[in-house]
Length: 334
Image (cartoon, rainbow, N blue to C red; front, side, top):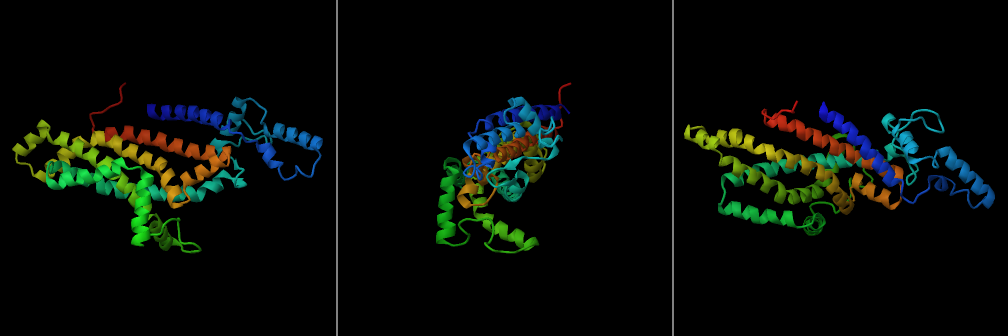
């Protein structure tokens, strides 16, 4: 309950700071709306209409009042109704000439689909690999894995993406170079999902390769510390099966520090997809965010930023809950 209260407080503080920041973008919504009629009007008439529109939209009000209307604490100046972020109104995109909710539906679906499958595949590979390397510490294969994974840890993600495109898309022709789906396709259901996953396969592999260096090495280091604990020696001395020692006793103790890394990595995937979505043309939230920033679309930028803010806050909450699940000894101080 304390964490939930903290999340609400942090959300409103962050949203206010973000609103103030994006209000500094040199863009005038009233002038943008009158762009089409400017040439056909006299300067005096245009200026009068411009000032009336600014007053109608509340653009000359103090920043606190404008934020209260945007978030939904105060009624809208035009309609007189509460119609803000808390009521589900994420604003109007001047760049796309439609509501922000309609703009972000498809990109958000692509981003969520990409990150879910990236997370599943990455954890399915890196966690067993890290455990195996810890159990076989110092072996030739362990040394080879550490030398290989350091590449993914050292190289920037966009460099890895370019190399993978050249190898798997240009030379081997296994995957398409970019795009989120087959152009002109009308697939539905499972066929549509498989088609989208096919186009996302290459960026998912890039993300997996980049995570090998960090996640697998972190799991390996945590497991090595856990395997050296006295309770593990005692379990082995009592004749407990090695599989039970590794996956029940050692992994449970090693999981606590790994939880933070896993959830932190999951959150970084959402921000890291900014790069991959632009390189592979996935039409996700990251690519849309860049276009909105370049187009000075403050309302759309705010809507996307709030999405990332909610993801980060929920990630912190999941981390706190995961601590208590992994280690029952952890309790919130009274």
